[in-house]
Length: 346
Image (cartoon, rainbow, N blue to C red; front, side, top):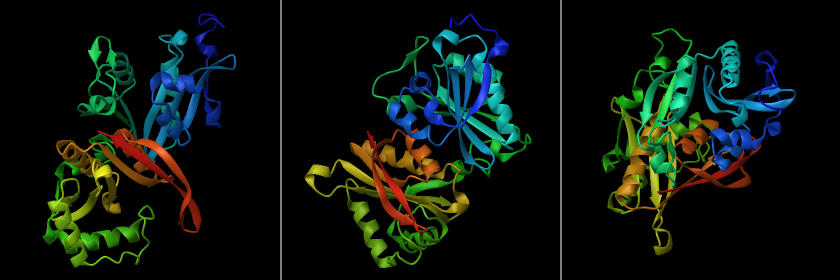
């Protein structure tokens, strides 16, 4: 069918029950990272725009919290662009999310994507944050659109919440600018006791850590030695997130100990549940990445449970890529869980 052989009213927007039927080539028009697309497409809800049973547009959204969603991918076939199909698709998706009681919808694009920036703002999105040099850090080849180098990631947000809602001020935040109020610093030996207690509390709060409650046989003296080693190491460190004098999160960067892997760092991270989903983990990672770059370290790696969708989204947004899957690696609450291996080259 020629792109002109249809009427606007004949475009059917419908929810997809099976993401496998969505053409991968269409998804990659909006996101050329095939590995990332293959991962998140299984976790998204998808809507398609169809003409005579032919999919010409697609939109996928990922739920982060009860009332918070993110648009992961929206694309229209090239021959059908600039004909109102993308707007019709997005309008329907936003209407459906509103019926799901969504209060916040977020989307990210590049500073050079002038069409996308205009498109989202016409649909009520507002620019709320810029991740400077995101595309420079995470893409090996330069991206140029509209004669502009794509450097920065622009975060836009649409909210149906009250204008005083905290979620409308900062994405994924229940307290205004909490991530900006938190201090991230290097652990000192005097932090040993508080850090041990924080780790033990975290074991009780979440199943996403490796150890179950009571299994962490770590005392204050042992933690102190771990901090002492990190302070003297060229490729290891421990970062703490602190709020009002309390340690609320940590990130351990554990460097390789032999010549062949000293360039590599293994990461363990945790944030107390009452402070989760507020940008604290991102702050810890950003601080650690800058430290690793200053030390001329080359590789960061971590493991994450396949069911930990929020963590997977965070790591992917920071540039980590899936490198492997350990099938049935863990038993969590009597269920086998896959462990996903991810890496980032600096």
